[in-house]
Figure (cartoon, rainbow, N blue to C red):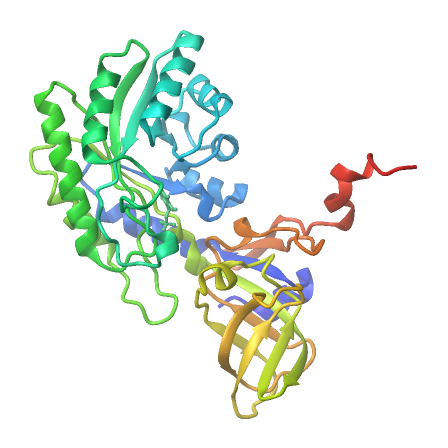
Length: 403
Ligand SMILES: Cc1ncc(COP(=O)(O)O)c(C=O)c1O
């Protein structure tokens, strides 16, 4: 059990706390599910890109799924081997593509015909061959929040099957491209297996039709998206997930790559925030806390649900409250109509499932420094990112101040 009160006292609030032992458990469970098959777990760095978190997974043999050259650099710095790094994203710049090719990562995951042309050109300019995969959009409804659905034709990600086929043929005929993989990712927080299986089936069929054209791919990249329990969702079991995918790969001897983010880190993370005041506006009761949407954006952005636990001496009857932060936006809330006991100044709220898309989506809006991050492992706590200072926030502007 993590002593949140002691951590809040020592490191102050708002504060992110990550349970590294839980991350280990999740990683091991997923690895076990694919045991006996050639597979790479490529941690989706965007979920929680703290160097120590990426390093933690790298030590367990993880690869990295990156969506910017910054993330590629982070992964390398954290010790992820270059041959386990994938670079995805719909909008890569020429400089990013060049650097990825020069760093000799596993492959660049291409998301459009236009991008394939740029990758070829960049490789040509460098006198190199770029390994690529193509992100296919299988047009499957993942049955998740529309903001995190990515595998439908009206989403910006990937290319349709026919386009992908054309692109593989073009890549095979290019002296500067080496098509080695195929990729799909239909969405995040997936709690139903059938859409994933259907998508894998469609993509595996495409691989078979490419084989006929003498295009042999080595990597079958199933993306990320495994859902977790925020409230009362039924999460997919890693074993069932692996079996569903493997069932679509008959007669295909490929290395499976999966790119979990949330599954590995979300429920390892806690966001600690202190109560400043309670206030009543008409019929509405608010609990105002010291954390805000700039620290944890998911409730404001997706209306996402996070469980909240109050640590208080009060044992009064629970009432429905909105938990809100100090930022000047009505959208600055962590929960609405949430049942909590009466709270005093300095009582602690623990916001759960905050280890993925939490700190990383943070900002300095309202000139608020971002929280510190603390890792807990084997009962020991250590700071893995310091709290941002005011001086740090203005450092890039200060020299331009008129004297
Ligand atoms: C291509 C790709 N892979 C992996 C992920 C990680 O998703 P999740 O955190 O839901 O596992 C994402 C999330 O957006 C993604 O777009």
